[in-house]
Image 1 (spheres, rainbow, N blue to C red):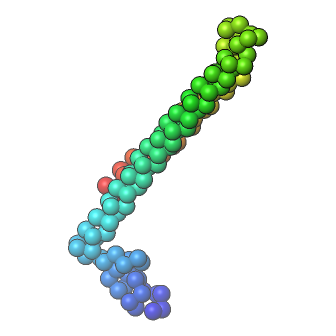
Image 2 (image 1 turned 180 degrees about the vertical axis):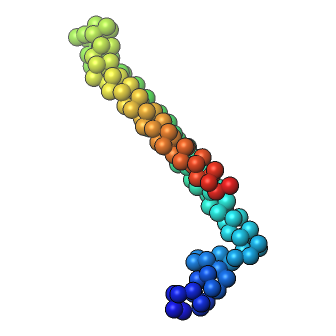
Image 3 (image 1 turned 30 degrees about the vertical axis):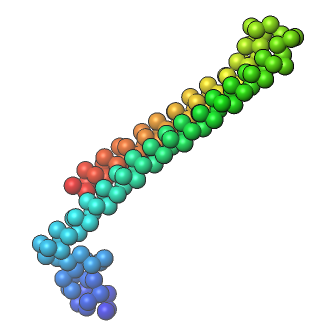
Length: 130
């Protein structure tokens, strides 16, 4: 068409909006249902994304727990004869546990920041959709 409104190119003159929304009750209802389906998909993607971040973090933490246990055992084995228990514990805490704890706190904070951005946006888009 001419893009000016009279042809079958999705202009007002053809009885539909751009993107094929028919200007009748059935067409509008179909469009609204599609919009709600997209909102549902977005809600699901948001929830899945956050759950996936949390699951990955749990997996990483389990691996880190195992690694930390291995380090503690190694320090016990190799430094046991030359360091007392308190000195070994302090060494592991300073070199490993502090970093481990900071990493866990950073990850938890990051997930909460993601949630703090995504959740209000999700709610706002849902409200506008309905």
